Image (tube, rainbow, N blue to C red; front, side, top):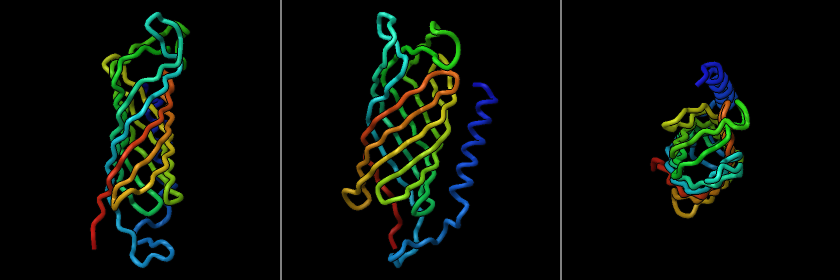
Length: 194
Protein backbone atom coordinates (compact mmCIF):
# COMPACT_ATOMS: atom_id res chain seq x y z
CA UNK A 1 0.00 0.00 0.00
CA UNK A 2 1.15 3.49 -0.73
CA UNK A 3 2.07 5.22 2.56
CA UNK A 4 0.84 8.57 1.24
CA UNK A 5 -2.73 7.26 0.81
CA UNK A 6 -2.60 5.43 4.13
CA UNK A 7 -1.64 8.69 5.85
CA UNK A 8 -4.53 10.58 4.13
CA UNK A 9 -6.98 7.92 5.27
CA UNK A 10 -5.78 8.09 8.87
CA UNK A 11 -5.92 11.89 8.89
CA UNK A 12 -9.49 11.97 7.52
CA UNK A 13 -10.65 9.35 10.03
CA UNK A 14 -8.96 11.20 12.91
CA UNK A 15 -10.71 14.45 11.93
CA UNK A 16 -14.03 12.61 11.84
CA UNK A 17 -13.45 11.22 15.34
CA UNK A 18 -12.47 14.64 16.63
CA UNK A 19 -15.73 16.11 15.35
CA UNK A 20 -17.76 13.25 16.81
CA UNK A 21 -16.22 13.48 20.26
CA UNK A 22 -16.04 17.26 20.61
CA UNK A 23 -18.98 17.27 23.05
CA UNK A 24 -18.73 15.56 26.44
CA UNK A 25 -19.70 11.94 25.98
CA UNK A 26 -20.03 10.63 29.51
CA UNK A 27 -23.10 10.74 31.71
CA UNK A 28 -25.33 12.11 28.97
CA UNK A 29 -29.05 11.69 29.41
CA UNK A 30 -31.77 11.65 26.82
CA UNK A 31 -34.64 14.06 27.37
CA UNK A 32 -37.29 12.30 29.44
CA UNK A 33 -34.89 9.50 30.44
CA UNK A 34 -34.04 9.44 34.15
CA UNK A 35 -30.96 7.22 33.93
CA UNK A 36 -27.63 8.40 32.51
CA UNK A 37 -26.31 6.65 29.42
CA UNK A 38 -23.97 3.71 30.09
CA UNK A 39 -21.49 2.74 27.34
CA UNK A 40 -22.03 -0.75 25.93
CA UNK A 41 -20.71 -3.31 23.43
CA UNK A 42 -22.57 -4.64 20.39
CA UNK A 43 -21.73 -7.65 18.21
CA UNK A 44 -23.41 -8.32 14.86
CA UNK A 45 -23.44 -10.82 12.00
CA UNK A 46 -24.59 -9.89 8.48
CA UNK A 47 -25.05 -11.57 5.14
CA UNK A 48 -25.34 -9.81 1.81
CA UNK A 49 -24.05 -9.15 -1.67
CA UNK A 50 -21.13 -7.04 -2.82
CA UNK A 51 -21.50 -5.39 -6.22
CA UNK A 52 -18.12 -5.10 -7.97
CA UNK A 53 -17.91 -2.46 -10.69
CA UNK A 54 -15.76 -3.41 -13.72
CA UNK A 55 -15.67 -7.10 -12.82
CA UNK A 56 -14.69 -9.71 -15.38
CA UNK A 57 -16.71 -12.83 -16.22
CA UNK A 58 -15.23 -16.24 -17.17
CA UNK A 59 -14.79 -15.11 -20.81
CA UNK A 60 -12.96 -11.92 -19.77
CA UNK A 61 -15.84 -9.57 -20.59
CA UNK A 62 -16.32 -6.50 -18.41
CA UNK A 63 -19.48 -6.61 -16.27
CA UNK A 64 -20.73 -5.84 -12.79
CA UNK A 65 -20.19 -8.85 -10.56
CA UNK A 66 -22.37 -9.67 -7.57
CA UNK A 67 -20.53 -11.77 -4.98
CA UNK A 68 -21.79 -12.99 -1.58
CA UNK A 69 -20.24 -11.85 1.68
CA UNK A 70 -20.51 -12.34 5.43
CA UNK A 71 -20.03 -9.40 7.76
CA UNK A 72 -18.85 -9.43 11.36
CA UNK A 73 -19.30 -6.11 13.18
CA UNK A 74 -18.21 -4.97 16.63
CA UNK A 75 -19.27 -1.58 18.03
CA UNK A 76 -18.59 0.20 21.31
CA UNK A 77 -21.28 2.81 21.98
CA UNK A 78 -19.65 5.82 23.64
CA UNK A 79 -22.85 7.87 23.93
CA UNK A 80 -26.47 7.72 22.73
CA UNK A 81 -25.36 9.22 19.40
CA UNK A 82 -21.79 7.97 18.79
CA UNK A 83 -19.97 4.64 18.54
CA UNK A 84 -16.63 3.26 17.37
CA UNK A 85 -16.41 -0.11 15.70
CA UNK A 86 -14.56 -2.63 13.57
CA UNK A 87 -16.64 -3.87 10.63
CA UNK A 88 -15.18 -6.76 8.64
CA UNK A 89 -16.51 -8.14 5.34
CA UNK A 90 -15.57 -11.67 4.23
CA UNK A 91 -16.18 -12.21 0.50
CA UNK A 92 -16.70 -15.94 -0.10
CA UNK A 93 -15.82 -16.15 -3.81
CA UNK A 94 -12.83 -15.50 -6.02
CA UNK A 95 -13.27 -12.94 -8.80
CA UNK A 96 -11.40 -10.81 -11.31
CA UNK A 97 -11.75 -7.05 -11.55
CA UNK A 98 -10.35 -4.27 -13.72
CA UNK A 99 -8.33 -1.74 -11.72
CA UNK A 100 -10.30 1.27 -12.90
CA UNK A 101 -8.49 3.83 -10.77
CA UNK A 102 -4.93 3.03 -11.80
CA UNK A 103 -3.36 1.68 -14.96
CA UNK A 104 -4.99 0.94 -18.28
CA UNK A 105 -8.19 -0.89 -19.21
CA UNK A 106 -6.33 -4.20 -19.43
CA UNK A 107 -5.02 -4.02 -15.85
CA UNK A 108 -7.02 -6.93 -14.39
CA UNK A 109 -6.38 -8.35 -10.93
CA UNK A 110 -7.66 -11.51 -9.30
CA UNK A 111 -9.11 -11.33 -5.79
CA UNK A 112 -9.08 -14.57 -3.78
CA UNK A 113 -11.73 -14.41 -1.05
CA UNK A 114 -10.72 -10.93 0.15
CA UNK A 115 -11.24 -9.82 3.74
CA UNK A 116 -11.99 -6.12 4.31
CA UNK A 117 -11.90 -4.81 7.91
CA UNK A 118 -12.49 -1.11 8.62
CA UNK A 119 -12.26 1.00 11.76
CA UNK A 120 -15.58 2.88 11.81
CA UNK A 121 -16.90 6.02 13.42
CA UNK A 122 -20.69 5.78 13.75
CA UNK A 123 -23.25 8.54 14.26
CA UNK A 124 -26.82 7.62 15.28
CA UNK A 125 -29.01 10.74 14.84
CA UNK A 126 -32.27 8.85 15.51
CA UNK A 127 -33.33 5.64 17.22
CA UNK A 128 -33.14 3.58 14.02
CA UNK A 129 -30.65 5.25 11.63
CA UNK A 130 -26.84 4.85 11.79
CA UNK A 131 -24.31 6.55 9.52
CA UNK A 132 -20.71 5.34 9.43
CA UNK A 133 -17.40 6.51 8.02
CA UNK A 134 -14.24 4.48 8.26
CA UNK A 135 -10.80 3.54 7.06
CA UNK A 136 -9.37 0.06 6.62
CA UNK A 137 -7.93 -2.34 4.12
CA UNK A 138 -8.82 -5.16 1.80
CA UNK A 139 -6.52 -8.14 2.09
CA UNK A 140 -6.13 -11.01 -0.38
CA UNK A 141 -3.17 -13.19 -1.31
CA UNK A 142 -2.60 -11.25 -4.55
CA UNK A 143 -2.46 -7.67 -3.26
CA UNK A 144 -3.70 -5.46 -0.40
CA UNK A 145 -5.57 -2.16 -0.80
CA UNK A 146 -6.34 0.76 1.50
CA UNK A 147 -10.05 1.56 1.62
CA UNK A 148 -12.48 4.14 2.93
CA UNK A 149 -16.00 3.02 3.80
CA UNK A 150 -19.31 4.88 3.95
CA UNK A 151 -22.25 3.03 5.51
CA UNK A 152 -25.94 3.62 6.20
CA UNK A 153 -27.93 1.26 8.41
CA UNK A 154 -31.53 1.06 9.57
CA UNK A 155 -32.11 -1.15 12.62
CA UNK A 156 -35.15 -2.27 14.60
CA UNK A 157 -35.02 -3.84 18.06
CA UNK A 158 -36.88 -7.18 18.06
CA UNK A 159 -36.25 -8.28 21.63
CA UNK A 160 -34.35 -6.94 24.58
CA UNK A 161 -30.85 -6.30 23.25
CA UNK A 162 -31.46 -7.99 19.87
CA UNK A 163 -31.72 -5.93 16.69
CA UNK A 164 -32.30 -6.67 12.99
CA UNK A 165 -30.81 -4.20 10.52
CA UNK A 166 -30.53 -3.58 6.81
CA UNK A 167 -27.42 -1.83 5.51
CA UNK A 168 -25.93 -0.26 2.41
CA UNK A 169 -22.25 0.61 2.19
CA UNK A 170 -19.80 1.92 -0.37
CA UNK A 171 -16.10 1.03 -0.30
CA UNK A 172 -13.50 3.18 -2.08
CA UNK A 173 -10.37 1.06 -2.64
CA UNK A 174 -7.52 3.50 -3.28
CA UNK A 175 -5.86 3.03 -6.68
CA UNK A 176 -7.92 -0.08 -7.34
CA UNK A 177 -11.70 -0.47 -7.63
CA UNK A 178 -14.94 0.42 -5.82
CA UNK A 179 -17.82 -1.71 -4.55
CA UNK A 180 -21.18 -1.23 -2.92
CA UNK A 181 -22.89 -3.76 -0.69
CA UNK A 182 -26.36 -4.45 0.56
CA UNK A 183 -26.86 -6.66 3.58
CA UNK A 184 -29.15 -7.86 6.32
CA UNK A 185 -27.89 -8.55 9.81
CA UNK A 186 -28.70 -9.34 13.40
CA UNK A 187 -26.87 -7.95 16.41
CA UNK A 188 -26.82 -8.28 20.19
CA UNK A 189 -26.15 -5.39 22.58
CA UNK A 190 -24.40 -6.20 25.85
CA UNK A 191 -25.62 -3.57 28.29
CA UNK A 192 -24.84 -3.70 31.99
CA UNK A 193 -27.89 -3.99 34.16
CA UNK A 194 -28.33 -1.68 37.16
